[in-house]
Length: 310
Image 1: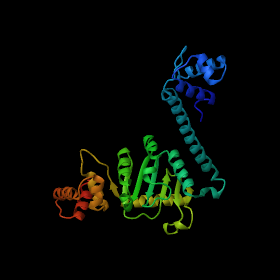
Image 2: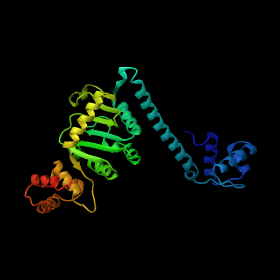
Image 3: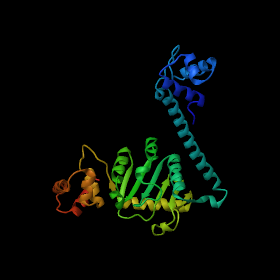
Image 4: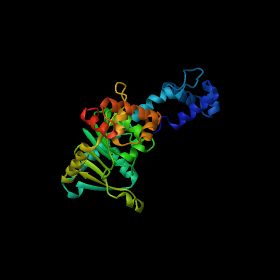
């Protein structure tokens, strides 16, 4: 994308170095005729990059060109969404003409990452996600598509493997997403990696972790079919069993702590995330157990579920 023609960019750079010049002086330094110099300077003035003559002086480019760049970025983003929507519409319509369109194989992490991007960009209602501890296409902290999707009203439900919560930055990223509207839960182990958009498309890696060293990541894109219905049912069955991960709250300061304890995170990891000492975590847990009338963490977890604290 060229914000300025090369001749105008060179003229602007020269004027910056000259700290201001009249038409004749500029024409001499640029090695062009006076008429050409005047035309270039006036075009730069029209763009808001230089002051009016007779002495032309360079103005900051970020003000004049920043708005142009912003418009171009908005156009590109709009075009990306249109391509994603058209691609999904094409695949949705062609799958009825050929059984092979019900499933598509994607090979390689970059290609898989791009399909995950398209899936979220085109989602209209809900994203369901199984997040295992060793991502093959992207980490949760790299998922730049979730925030725009949440903003436009797409519901996110994600289940995280417990080991993922100990990865640097992951728990903080999850808590931030929960604050923006994501519904998050956790389980000790998940059976597969899985992402589902609405009831239209699922992305499921095919190569098990033990074989990942044998080649590139490979995933299946599964469209509306009984197989997709089965994957949705699989997600829902695990969702019912998973433990909620709750965000921080000023009126319920122990809500996040309690959800991490019930999820099975050790005190040291909890203390690291909450940026407090392990002793402080234990003291706050003692207080919660006193309120619940129990003397063990298992009893606290039971009472938390019974009383609706989670």
